[in-house]
Length: 520
Image 1 (cartoon, one colour):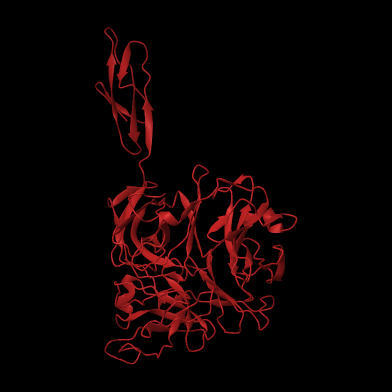
Image 2 (tube, one colour):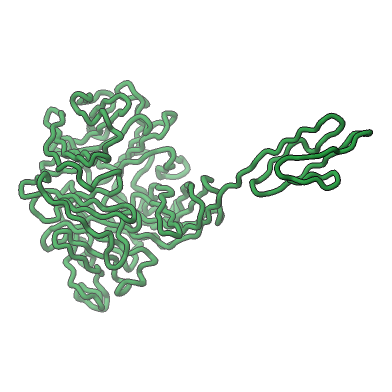
């Protein structure tokens, strides 16, 4: 949905399904909004470089065709997979039609996604995956570092995974099969993070559990980049005495500057900072190769040596892992996180003391709802204060139950550093009654910040109503003829006998008659 009275592109979660990808390879994310319903048109919005304004604006948007390859491609009809299709920077969009058991690949040229003519077509005979799309999950990454994305095809039910190679003629071949019936990658229960954790030149896989009572899994490629014979390692979903799950906190893929190895940084949420050594500490750093973790604190103004004043560990500086480039830009030596970027550097006037310049900033206020209570499945608005952060691509709103279960409420594009949108509103609903704490976090391609402060929300079960109807015999009447009654409540009716008649009896619903009043 484009709002002409504002300069930013806004969208509703129930109207569009977003995908962020750098189609034109300018190191700025672009936004592909796939329509949920065939009644809406999908959009492509090219991101633009701005530290003081929105990243996605209407003048950079393209309204995409309603039909491609002769078929509708709303989220109900098609799955989208952006990827790098050639080592010279060429990108494309793979569109999968599960019902047709077919797929097509389109190329991005210049500043346009050309959906008029596919560069490749695929059938189930060529790609057996198309016979059972729902049973699989696809991820893209450059596993062999040749500049072209491979497809990690996860068997969500079978546990049989494989990596597919896109050839020069755009056909797919099986590059390698991962040992059968592995425990990770099942039922979409984990966030798949790809990084070179042992610095051997080949990508490894970390399956970060989304929900409680799950484990993380680490799959390290061997010295030839193969996963077929490697041992899968189980990792505890706890770090520093805190739960470590993708939905319960923010986790970012980072790289150590000293040896360039990829690590994982689990950020503190707002209510967890009391457990930190001091307010300069931002979370816990996990080293998958060494299986060690440590609290990570930024340089303290009082220490002057790159450590927080009470910090136990001397932390190696970090930089964000970006698979698109290997240029390390160090713009702030006091901050452990900087991006890999070949473009100009972003900056912002809003800089919290416990945040790095290139992390998405943690929200500083709680979400606000229009009321404190809503019925089950009733839509409610959530108002989010902008963090004023040009690095944040989206805000994710979550509700946490009393039993510490996390429920996704909504996702919305962050407004960037603009002052014209100090508040963003998104709608959501919850299907389970109970008391919740509602929080939100800011996210970009590398991960999410910790959650900010919480707002309270009560979801109550919608009352069940029954229609009580009456039937009067000859010689009398009942008023009213029917009533709608909430389950568990009672109601009453007036029974009137005509002249020359008496009330012989009234029955039904376990009620009783007193005079002329029948009460259920």
